[in-house]
Image 1 (cartoon, rainbow, N blue to C red):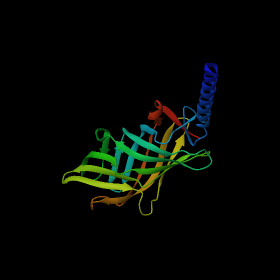
Image 2 (image 1 turned 30 degrees about the vertical axis):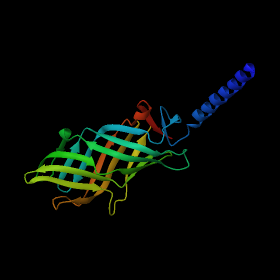
Image 3 (image 1 turned 135 degrees about the vertical axis):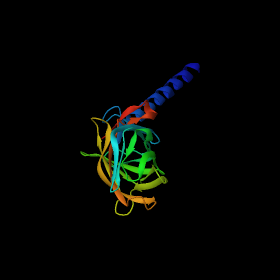
Image 4 (image 1 turned 135 degrees about the horizontal axis):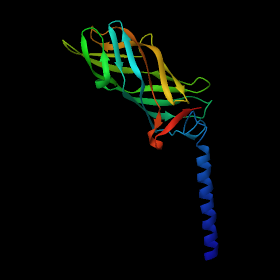
Length: 216
């Protein structure tokens, strides 16, 4: 009886090991992977981050805001198999460090804060020219002026429905060429529109030992 019990236990153990191996093998083929293209999938709820690697530059008719350091953070909410849909990210941080920002906007003398005002949505489109398409973006910029702080929110509203960033597996970065943004809210001192450019990277999956993120 003991021999039979041990045999059944061994069979069950082998089954569990094979099942786990099957699950591990299935965790590839997603739009987003870590370590390499075609590597292990980025999991839903993983946190991905990247530092500014190319200045965030916001240009308006009244002047330019330039920030050289900051952070991008997002939570992955969907990562289907490549070719079947887009990976989706909830972007919770698009931050610039005020100490490393400058402003030439008329009537202002320093940058107080540059922060995302509520999560934006990022859709990762795979293929030969992968992109991050950002919607529902509200980036809040506060500047110090001689009349007090001026806060302007810019992003995707009105004629601007999204901003697009190019994704690279060489640098594991997101690069935003000149993108239009519109004023969402702010005082009469805020220009009605402007442009944004910049980049972040390398983008790392901090949930998976800060491995580099690739798009497939």
